[in-house]
Amino acid sequence: MKLSIIVPVYNMAADKKLEYCLESLVNQTIADYEILAIDDCSTDSSMEILRAYESRYPEKFHAIHSQVNKKQGGAKNIGMEMAKGEWIGFIDSDDWITPDFYEKLIRKGEETGADIVGCDYHLTDKHSMEIGQVVHNNKKEQTGILDKEKYKSLIIDGGSLVVKVYRREIVIDHPSRFPEGIFYEDNALGNSWMMRAKHFEYLEEPMYYYYQHDTSTVHTITKKRCEDRMEAGRIMLWEAQHYHYLEPYRLEIEFSFTVLFYVNTLFTYMQGVKPPRYGFVKKLGREMKEKFPHFQENPYYKERMHEEEKKLVAMQMHATLWFMLYYKMLWAYRNFRKRRKPEAD
Image 1 (cartoon, one colour):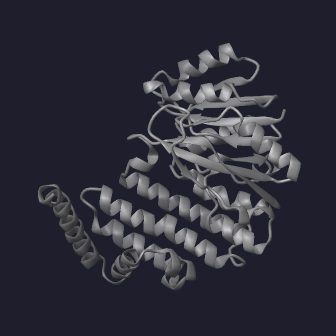
Image 2 (spheres, rainbow, N blue to C red):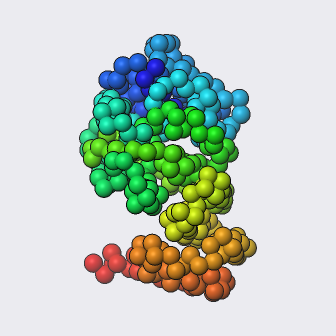
């Protein structure tokens, strides 16, 4: 079989989100493929929708019900164990793709001998095939036979996992599996898969539609989500140590870990979790310092982090309580300015 598409599903029946995704999958132009849709104990009618598609497309659609809620990583692992394809693709069940998405990616891979092929994507808030806000997921200079400089670039700017297709040996034959029970699972394994590849290709064409809505993972901030991001960072670091690419790419891994584990967690926690707890913020900073005590000297950190973020990070590293008080006052002032601006206009 040419391709296996793995779709983790959880409570996506509302507003026909799931059906819009599945319609784009069953109408792919590539021949000889299977769709493995894994329902992760949905409490809505998602499983019934999957069974209906299995009845309509028995030759290529497989509806699987997980007996335990394992989050997206666990659902993907179930799909990986069942996948028969030479190529493996993943898609979020509230997103959709162009009809020739997989045909184009796999053709590029087979023409060039690439192990992984990616493309660009749209950000959109409505169900349509109109072009939305285009995000360039990779860069042309990352493509071709991979050398140390390209690996460095791909660790720093690897792009999203779902807008790529992978040769089977890169993901299925890799001993690691997605972490279960947490969000941000893609971040844990993306580097290890890329480091196994010898050749990467990229189509500068937006063929994946990334649906933005209020219940998206990226729009939901809880303490648990923050802890999940931290755990994904720990696993990413463990993978680099275990598979011996931490030292050759130490600066890149350090920066990736800093952003995922610490910076993104710190600021989303402070903005979204009310009230923020001193103990959580203190522990976060302490673990960051233990893992990479000199992360603020990292050249990527110096170049890429906004000056205000660097100032706030330095403050938190020095005195957590003062950082939290200052941050609270800073956001109160900004919210006040926002409310006052329309009146001034």
